[in-house]
Image (tube, rainbow, N blue to C red):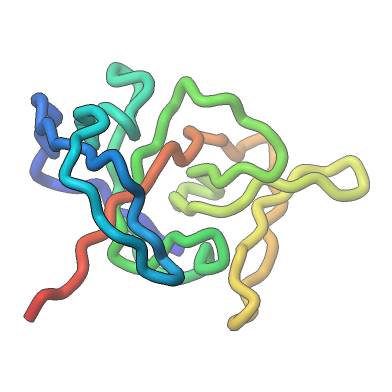
Length: 144
């Protein structure tokens, strides 16, 4: 799954949005409240370490099962803890890819998360680099 850095920077200056006190049900609809619970800066909510977070655009669907889709923008935190089971951005043989960090038989792998298609695991070598941990995603839906 190739990834491409975003050419234009995403501005993270205080985009404050009022958060409703009630949550939006994704199942059975519930009455909405007009009261505001808090304010949130969506970019700051995703970005925990601003100096070490970079934005990349995803190409491909190998992380479909963890909710990362083709065209999404991912926040990659270089200061994030690299732990098994986390979605990471890695450089393997000069190519940048996003996968799930796994370990099998004492060896580390990058594994896809897409049960609909078959993508191969990628074994990490000493030349591979886990560049950062995926801290969040931004997705925009078509409104037309």
